[in-house]
Length: 221
Image 1 (cartoon, helix red, strand yellow):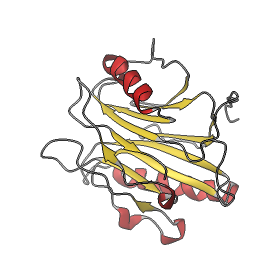
Image 2 (cartoon, helix red, strand yellow; image 1 turned 120 degrees about the vertical axis):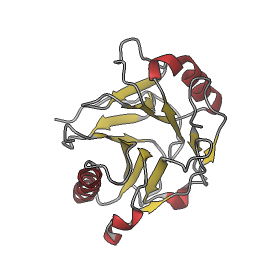
Image 3 (tube, one colour; image 1 turned 45 degrees about the horizontal axis):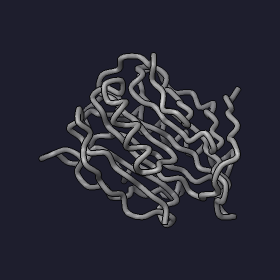
Image 4 (spheres, helix red, strand yellow; image 1 turned 45 degrees about the vertical axis):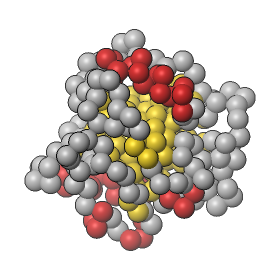
């Protein structure tokens, strides 16, 4: 059964702003992350971390925390005045993925909700988990469309060498360009969506003190 959290009386913002942060450890960067979330007035914050250290004491006031299952390397913070629901999509134990539906007020009539899939796959293309991850993402999106055909879909997080050409055209997904998030390396941060027309180009921000990767900000038009 899906988990559910009711939003409070908040703003009518339409599409949510999204901050994507790739950290060494969420617990060691939590203060910096909270300051950045407040500074940028973030609606949804996506976190991937290299070293999972549990979730005890992890909290950002005014936000609901959705934790990934399995390895515990991913999380999603959603502003409390936006309704958020964990979707009952089964994630294989070997993968890092999290599916959450958000229902901000003020979406256009042709988009019923926004489904966010947080993903963490920091491995090269030869990884044995690459094919299962791609298959899982395709299956999850197809299932989302079957339940809610007008869903806005956002797949976001870390995925090294994501093969965009593997996405079936009928899913209507495109990869949004992001700038490199680590010096001398190609960007691992991905944003794949069917609502790109409603957003500006993602921008990289100054890095956190304890992270080599730059966070990425994605805001609606």
